[in-house]
Image (cartoon, rainbow, N blue to C red; front, side, top):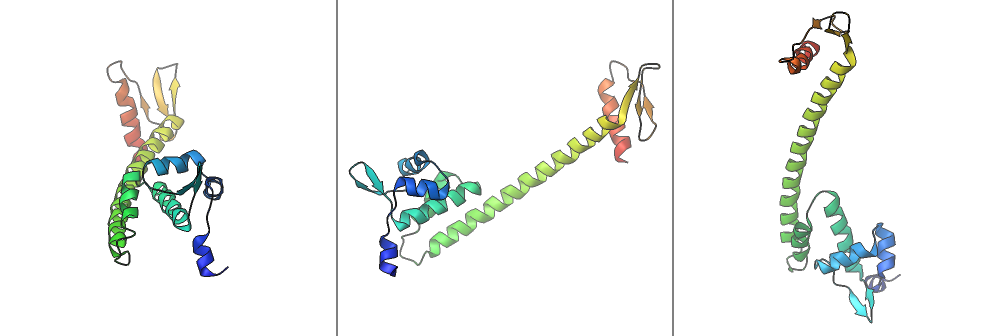
Length: 164
């Protein structure tokens, strides 16, 4: 297909919804948000190759955590006539910020997993002895008999022993 023909290729909402694995409702929502502006032929939306490229940008942006407002800002910079220099600069800045935020979230998740794994290990390794009313750590052999006031301390003490 000659290059001019490729640029003039058009798509229906069903074509693009199927290609990108989204619903027609999603594409209409992006249109309502001002991210897409397909031509109309009567009630039918006719999407261009440019609209198709924008959908790719929108979906990638959503996958990596950008808001529709941020995606809109990046898309608006596409046609400034500066060879997309400003769009590239703004996108790089937003990507850097998003990477930092995601790394911080990952660190928080890793810390939570570590704590949860320790608690899981603790619970997996203790048992209650009804004969003497003590909790026994099967791994270390330590015992502890909590009072009502310090029952929560049991898990703290056993956790410290398991982690040392």
